[in-house]
Length: 215
Length: 105
Image (cartoon, rainbow over all chains, first blue to last red; front, side, top):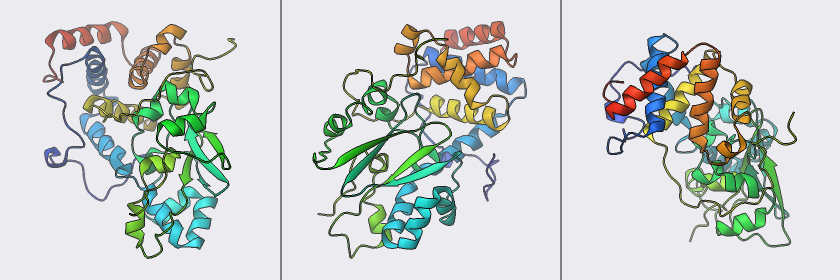
C-alpha cells in the first residue's frame, strides 16, 4: 500500500534529506552489492529512484516515535485507552497515524506484571509507530536471551523489576506486532498530554525501559 | 525437514546485548525502502523472503547481520525469480566495488 501524502515528492530533497549520505565512509562490499542491485532494478523498470526516495521519506513516519502520543492520550483519556487496547490500529488512525502493520496489539503494564517485546525469529517491530528498531532489538543476543532470562536482560539495561512483579515476554512476528503501554509515573498528575508524551521513551514501548520520571 | 531452523534462536545462550545504538546507514535505509517497494509492487512477499533467510547455512547465519541478511535474501530471491540476472549482478557489483564510489549510481 502506498501512502497518499499531501505533498508531492518531485521537489529537491536536499533541504530535508532523510539521513546523511555517509560520504565520509568508505564504500563497503555490502553497500556496493546493494547499489548494484538498485541500479539493475531501476534499469529494468521495477522501481524508480523517485519511488525509493519517497518510500524512504515515508519510512521516517515513525520518527520521532508516534506511540508516545497514543500512550499519553491513553493516560489522560480512559475511553481512548480502552479503544487502544481493543484496536491499536484504529486508535492510531484517530490521531492521524497510519499504521501499516498487519496487526498491532497493545499490552498494558500493571503493578503485577511487566511486559517486554522481542522477535526471536527475525526482528519484527512496529515501525509505523516506533521507527526503525534499535541495534539491541535486531541483535542475536537480545533475540536469544529475552525469552530465557528477561529479568537479567532488563538489569543490563539498568531496569530492575522487583521479584514480586511478573515479567511476560511477547514474541512478535510479521503478522502480529506488539506495543507496550507503560504505567503512568507517579507525580505526573499536573502534566499536559505533550509533557506526558515526552516521558515515554521508545525503549519503554518495547518494555526494555520504564518511562522517564519527572524530577 | 530440519529439526530446528537457523533463525530459531529464541532461548539459546548468548552474550551481552549491545547497549550502544547505531543509526542506520544511508544505503541501509535505501535498501529497506527498496525492499518495501518490492513488497508493495507484489514482486516479493514476506514469506518468500523469510524462506531465503531460513535456507542460509547455519555458520553463515551465525556470522551474518540483520542488514546483511536482508540484502542477501533480496538478491537471492530476485535472481531466483529471474527479476535480476546473476551474471549481470555480479559484474555490476564488482564494477562498483572496484570504482569505490557511489557517484555513478
